[in-house]
Length: 262
Image 1: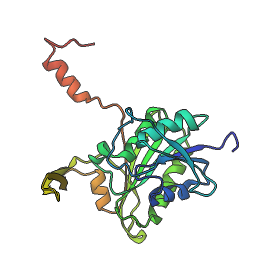
Image 2: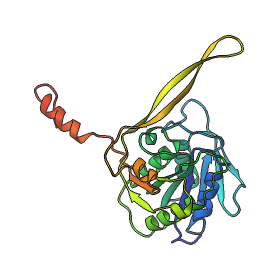
Image 3: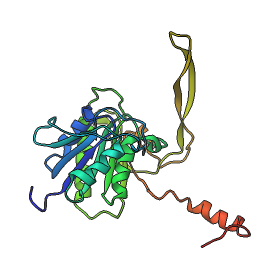
Image 4: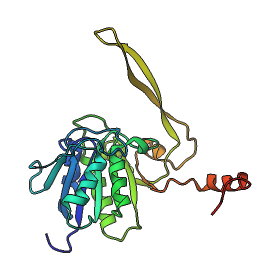
């Protein structure tokens, strides 16, 4: 590796053997020095969980020709932390997480291991992107997704990005001739309406299986859900500062006789 070659850290939450991470590697492997650190098993829905009560295993694997790759027994966030502390000898230029099998738009950004891994890298000052394809099938076609990954990664590597840059990129499951391009969007106000179906195991004990449906309550334009429905890739810039500035102002006014303000 030459000194000017960018370091590209790649991770995911579907596990190091998932087709999505192989597609992600193929899309960018000639753009810099690629280092893969990913979970050794699926970790979907782990959010920003970290491992604190058990040891972490980190093993080098030979899964991708010519690519340094490690599998970790922990969560997606654990993978990024270990990559930074134990594997990379200097800060990565960019972190790519995915390509996730299934959507991570709207409220899913809260639960997504894909996005949490990218967020952890952004916290460390590494410009980061979480990529998701709206196809849950194991054998999904990543042809279009790889082109989107390539274009966005090239754009980010070509310029100095603002500190803590974090993008949530969702790619529609459409044929290439129906694909309409990219849109910079905001996160939709949409959520899963869960239902916990009670079932009975062979021993007669009850257990619960989460089901439900996705509900979009956002009737305004410019959202990630709308863009995806129209055949666009949605690109949502995500903040790592969760402060609600409007609520802060409201509290300062309503609670000024009680709360100590800075």
